[in-house]
Image 1 (cartoon, one colour):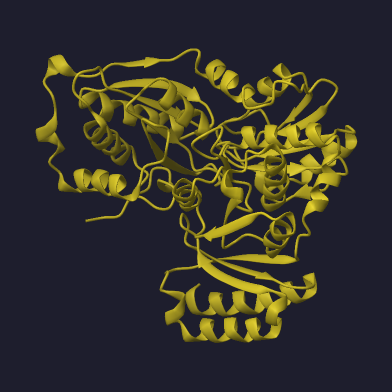
Image 2 (tube, rainbow, N blue to C red):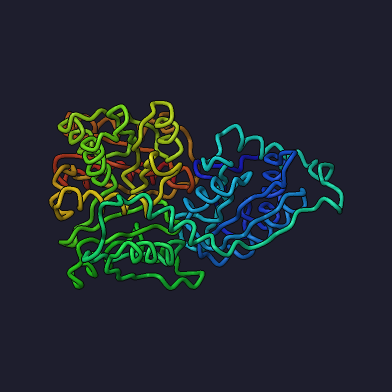
Length: 449
């Protein structure tokens, strides 16, 4: 049996296995069958980002879903967390998003939410895979009279914007605040500007003209150079960059300096502690978190726990420990008081709320955490053997760790969604981290590239 689902749904190059129209139709069929419940009209919400291949996959999903006697509700381009919200609020049986997040336009992916707005657990994804690879779905088809319908939901964006605005404190306004938004030519290109405008901000938006091929292209959370320049040019109070599907956020302060996701977590956790909303005085972070975050949280008297990389693992730990904030340095932050998944626009609004509550510019708030120099090199690999089974890599990692001592750390891990090995080194100086990171990356490339 094959393996379809990675750490964040099914993902790959559009029109190549597994991201083919045929597979999308089968995922639609399997999901519809699995979530179909008797006693009501079953329905599944479908949303997408701005990729060219979204049209093809959207229609394939509809065919699969309707063939199993389930209705498909199309909401068009909307951020991934918007689908999580709509699925829950519409009491749908499931929600499906077509997106490859921060990847280039050639890629696409399928993420599935259950009716409560949470991403699927491993066992449910495995059940979908079982159905697809058992090749017996033809026998599960309903009669011609019981086929599902497909229709468009015209007010989806408006409903989501109202939800977003309610996450910003009612006692504050964004009037008189200058904000620059980088929408990555992706799913936030209409929702984000409208949300900030309706809250009173003086909003300037860049990269908000998607053409199907320019999503994430030298813009968004992965490429903030233009946003940083635009914030300075417009004398803005803050800049926000989203990724292609709108679940990540990178902030830029009024001096044009980029903040990491970890800094945003530290700022928001501090405010939540003061407000009494930091449940169990706890922050959930990942092994990729900068050392500076643990140092900052310790100074603030806030506890933290570490998980594997991936928002699903952060969420699992948050639910288990009843935490209200957790996230990744990449800008994927979950505020469980507000939503079931990471939402870049909600994160941006919480940063704005922190600025208002403290009465300070973002550059001042950012001083709460010192970011340790970090070097990250992504190495394309042909295979992904267990790192511990490659003696040359183990040897160079140990040599670097011995060289750093207690003043840094090393992390070598594979990407969950791409054929890539990530080499990360933190240390006392940028020169050291770059040198050590390069040494490890060279060995990884030689053995696995």
